[in-house]
Image (cartoon, rainbow, N blue to C red; front, side, top):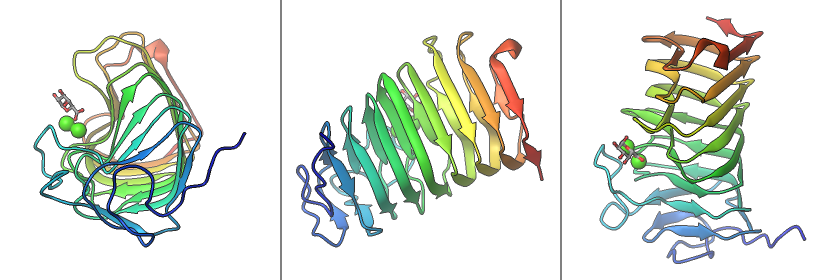
Length: 216
Ligand code: ADA
Ligand code: CA
Ligand code: CA
């Protein structure tokens, strides 16, 4: 089955209305469900979820269980700890207007597919990967942050990052940084500029595959 389309904000413990709004408790998108935000803007309640600063321990605005899909959502400011994923999830056309502590964290192993959307203005990470995963991001625009993707520091599990048709600019450090000798990156058809140190940090050179990218 294709799963229920729960739409504008009544999935889980949120107090948002059908028009988006201030999220006071994390919106949980359950296995097999699609949450279609309809392009509405959701912001975190700073008191209950977090103020979007660099303080660790903030809560996410959305939690995606394995099999969940999130689409047409705008995360406004503050965005607290963004989106947490647990397993195989899909995001389509999700926009972060002002990245919080980070934009999205992979909390449970699986395949994360991000198609379309954008993120900007983060102090540090855009995407934080804390569990073994295949992480595919395409048609996504990211600007002004520290790192586009960071595998949690000191971890040695395997992450396969696939970046296609993205535009990545103004990253103070890198596009993907890992400390794992088994993690890989494949980047294709992507435009990038103003990457402060190096596009890829910590990867073994055989684990880097690139084609048809343009530095501008
Ligand atoms: C930092 C921190 C980790 C984890 C991570 C995150 O890297 O050291 O423990 O909290 O941020 O998931 O935001
Ligand atoms: Ca962090
Ligand atoms: Ca975080």
